[in-house]
Image 1 (cartoon, rainbow, N blue to C red):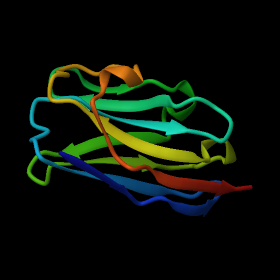
Image 2: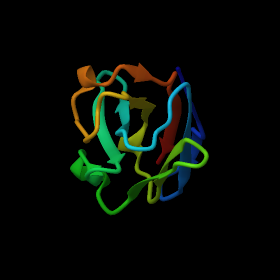
Image 3: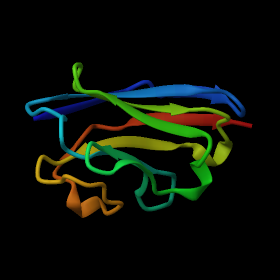
Image 4: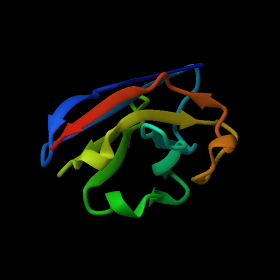
Length: 124
């Protein structure tokens, strides 16, 4: 099983990025997959998640209305569209999934498989 995250980079405040997470080894169809982030000096936190059972869930209030999660089951890929980025969004972003997880969870320890992380840096 492999989760390959990509799409991070350096962007100015107010800009946009789209992160992608390509999954191989199991199909996302039916299972939850989420995006988490770890900002410098902080613990990893849940950002958003999507599953066929309960749709999309936003864990982090600060990204509501700015970040949108989506997935393409045919491509076995999940996306995180990030708009109106702010310096406080600077973090390493990780995708995570688990074929045992049918509904979304904000808890790191409920996800078995993790991508390698992609760095998002937002300058002011």
